[in-house]
Amino acid sequence: MEVKNKIVDAVNSAVQSLIADGTFKANGDLPSVSLEVPPKKEFGDFATNFAMQSAKIFRTNPKKIAEEIKLRINADFLDKIEIAGAGFMNFYLKSDVIYTELKNIYCAENFGQLPPKNNATIQIEYVSANPTGLLHVGHGRGAAAGSAIVNILRAAGYNVESEYYINDAGNQMENLAKSVNARYLELLEQPCEFPEDGYHGVDIIDTAKKIVERDGDKYLSLPEDERLKILQDLAYADKLAELKKDLSNFRVDFDKWFSERTLHPDKINDAIKILRDKGEIYEKDGALWLSSMKYGDDKDRVVVRENGVPTYLAADIAYHKNKFDRNFGTMINLWGADHHGYIARVKAAMSALGFDADKLKILLLQMVSLYRGGELVKMSKRTGESITLRELMDEVGTDAARYFFLMRSIDSQLDFDLDLATKQSSENPVYYIQYAHARICSIFRQADEVGLKLDAAPKFSMMTTAAEIDLINKIFEYPNEIEKAAEEFAPQRIARYAYDLAAQFHSFYRDCRILGVDTDLAKARLALVKVTAHTIKHALNLLGVSAPTSM
Image (tube, rainbow, N blue to C red; front, side):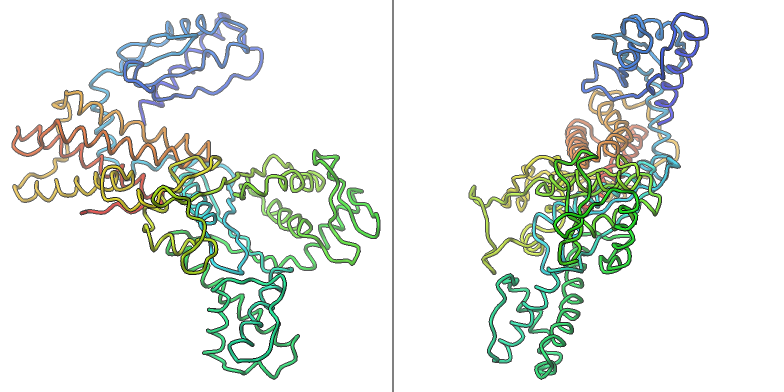
């Protein structure tokens, strides 16, 4: 918002003036001025804790800093500035500024899209489940979080590239081939023994059935090693297609799909050679070890086993080296909480290669527990195994699934109430938000019926009630919420904001009539409602949730 930038500029100008005339001396780099929307209206329209953040730099009491800055600000758009607590500066806007800002938002075509940051591209890798079975609800949380973070970062003005790392090499693919082979032989009534480490899911049978239906016993007479190779390729293609189908239905897409196979063997060997040349790998007991303890890991790690086969870590080193070689500004991985111990070894490897490991950020996703009727749901009714994302979407719908995954911080365990997610009442948060948007669409249909049209320049100053001003101020908060959600990788902020905005609108709707009042007032309120609808829809879009026009 323009007024927010004006306040930041006014504070910066005051600070520079204080330094220039010798009132304060900066002993180091000053923090940037950041504005927050206070939790309560009585604390102003915006607030900053700059005085407290700069106290050590100025070696001055923060309250004194705030008072001196206040004396140097003479802005015609401010009603007053108050100093609170240890040195908070609370800014109160003049009423006409509020209406001017609302007009700017009303006339804007892309409110919610912040200016470009012009920073180096941020890469986000998420989901990256093995293509050996269907996605489960844990993957669903990662898919919802990752895609929402991508959307939010883009709305905040960052360049973002999303990526899925396909684990299509190694033991899991061999086990997939053996599992499908066993089911293939069973379906053709041939003797077989199911592999000890095989995948028992019903989806493996489904894949084998597709092969039999299409190709019959075409592969039965082949030597087992040839048949396994063919079945692995066929099963891999089927599993990847099903995985992509579920993600698409869950409104998740990726800019790049990166195959682990492309790393074997050359890229892995290249990374290991570089580390050996740097003296970061040594040989012991016939295996090759990374000196990861030097870089903060709790022990050194094997990268090539004594039989010459690279470990999973070796592939991950090559993959993350590839990321760094692509010159991303920041690389973000969303991993399950069970990968916590893996962070140190990957970062150690990047440091050993000479990269800045701080550019790699790992976000850990905590577990999801599903509840129905107050009871924990552990297994799928169909398969007796983990509940799939596909089953969850079938039961509660994509909108509810995505919103419920996103309404809590990803670093906290999520208790997903299946009964609540399917309720069509205000108790269900996603229904409550969507109903607000649908109600606004209904208002416009009613306005159209009586010939009430939007004005190019509504008389916003006619709106003076608490319900109107509170709704306007809530809309003003949106750009700040996007900025904070992007900085913190916190889609739950947008989920909470959308709910709070819907609640503010419902209060407005209860207290302020639109039809049957003074025409200019009606048009002003209708314009406010239009901005509200745009903001709700924009926030829901960031979360990957639809904004229905009727319910």
